[in-house]
Image (cartoon, rainbow, N blue to C red; front, side):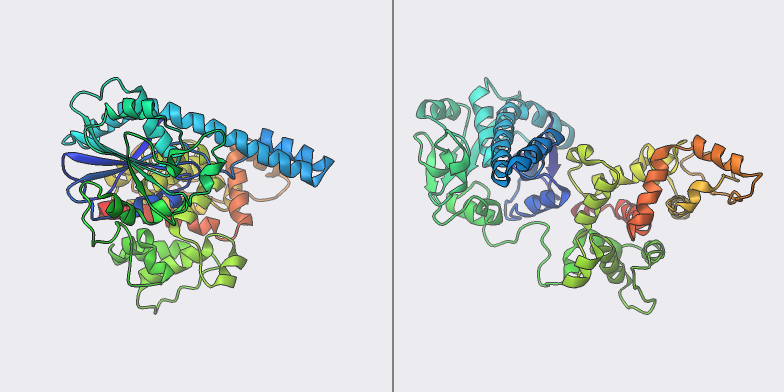
Length: 480
């Protein structure tokens, strides 16, 4: 199991704050963005890093568990409910054990990341919430000595889902050069579900600085992280500034979706028009040429095409861009690879790679290394490749034979693949048609059928590929 580390923009200094989430958190791109946005910008002169670990989610049920619960429900609905509850207890217990295992490898993996990305860092502060607190406790308990050149400064545990005896706390304390803080609340009833343990997150324990935060529930700590840091007087925290990544001053759902709207707002108009061209191929869009803010119009309509169209119409708005990306990763069955994506552009890269791998099974530069190859292409060349991709997303394209041969090994190739002429449905061509179908991978046909059945998919996919290119060319760390 590996951590996925994600640094916040404008990181600098010799001190790094390492934030670690708990159970059922960091499981999706949207949730990771929320966690990253919770870190106060007023943590001055520090490198701020989120350490995402595979903490799973309460709602994720594998086939074995699903079949077991369904079998129990056939006996009686109450038996089904009991089976589900028992299965979730087993699931939490398994993830709880995983947190302890991840704690043992945290510093080793973190040290490699710091060496690669932040070589100036010499001191780390560890901040863990819920099972993230258990993970940190495991790190400090099993640590013999920190990696060479790295020391542990302060430790802040929030609502820690772990039982810590005074002797264990004393052992942990030996590995901490600064403060060891236990932020706890007697009003955190969720910790009662940590069966068999009297959690640190509800109690004072010797050798910690125990700071009670009244009226805090289990989910309040990330929402009110600035308040927690103010109450605990966390090192480096300077109150009075807003959290990073949060767009304020507007309730507009489009403008708040900065990772979409801001990217195209700050990009050349030609990129926005190209994105609009592909999105308008869906009959579900309504972008008028006369709209003053074309970036806003595109972002609004992309949000509306994403998700469930009837739900979007009922609430008067669509889903966020991160939710659109999650929807596409489900479409391409990429859930197992999402843990490696710590931010928007990494998720877009994964999707673009999958788009082209499905559409061009014989190979394409953008199916191998989208970041490097997109950078090597001119804007017009990239646009031609996206046009070819868009054409291949239709079911009709499956029954076309290529009439133009292109050297796809050249990332800067100026000519995109043409889908060629439609094979006629005559008696003489039927055998040829069947032969063409036999040569093509079934996965592409399935993908094309999905894009036809789900309104907007064939428009969303090339539109996202254009946004990816715009983000890449903009190269703004705050919008990655």
